[in-house]
Image (tube, rainbow, N blue to C red):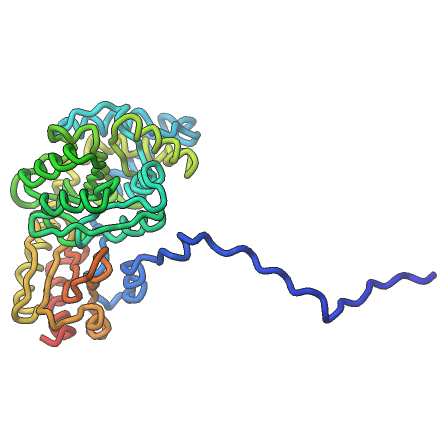
Length: 406
C-alpha cells in the first residue's frame, strides 16, 4: 500500500504577514524616566535619592496583618468575593468621615475607590479627554500624569509657575489662548518641587476656573505628611470650585503602596462616568484590601504621626547637608511636608549629563528635565529624603558633592 507523502514546502512560499502595529499612543508615549533610573541604581551600595517610595521599615506590618486577619476571620465570604465598582461601603464611609473632618463635607456616595490614585487619574482621562484636547499642567509636573495625558492623546501645555505654584494671570492667559478642558495640579507638597500653593493662590485659581470654564484635578497623595506650618484647605473646598474640582487621594504614602488603594471625589456625572470606565478596566479594586484598609483607618492617624516624626528628621538632615553638597550659587526648596526637595544648580550644570558621575560615586538623584512639559531647566534635580536615615543622607550628600564636582 502506497501512502501519500505531504508535498514539500516550496522555498518560494509567501512569507508570513506581519502583525498589525501597536496603537499610535503606545508608540508615542515612552516609559517613566524615573523607573529607568531606579533600575540602573538598584545596587545596594547606592544611596538612592531618586525614588519616590515610602520608607519600608516604617510600614505597620503588625497592624496591617491584624486588619487582614480580622477581615478573613469575620467576613471571609465577603472579603474573597467580587464587590461593587464604586468601592466597599465600609471604606467609603470611613473615607468620607475622614475627608469631612478635614474641612470638605463628603458623603460616601461622593467617592469612587480606585486601584491607587494613579488609576483615578487614568479614569479621569478616559472620561474627560478626547484625542487632541488640551490639558494644562504645572511646570514642572508629576511625571506619571504626563504619561496618562499622553496616552489619552491630549495636548499638554505647561503654565508658568513660581514658588507658590501656577500663576493665576498666566493661567487665565493660557485658558484664553489654548481653550483647555482640564487643569492638573498637585498643590500640596508638589512632586517634584515640594512646594505648597498658599490659600490665597488657591482661591485665585478656583476663581479663574469658575469664570472661564475649566475642570480642575487636585491630586493630593502627600497632604497628610505635613511637618511644619498649618494645613491649607483643598481647592475642592473653596467657593465656586465644588462643581468643577476632582480631588484625588491615596493610601500609598500613609498606609502601604502595595495595597494599591486610592480614591476619587468628583461631581456626580463625572464620577459615574469614571465608574463606567473602571468597570471596563478592572471591575473593582480588590475587596480584601478595601475591607482591611477600612479596619485600619481606626489606627491610621497614630501611624501617620509616627511616620511624620521620622520623615521630618530626614528632611532636616538633607536640608542641613545641602549647602556643602551643592555647587556655589545653587538654590533649593524647603518643603513643609511630603517626600521631595527640588534643587536648581547654576545654569552651566546639566544634571542629566552629570548623573553617571553621581552613580559612579554610589549616589543617585532624578534629573529635573523629564518633569517639564515645555522647555526643561536642565540644571534642576529632585531629591527624595524619606527612604534613608539621617546618617545615610549625610553620607549620600557627600557623595553627591563629589559627583557634581563640588
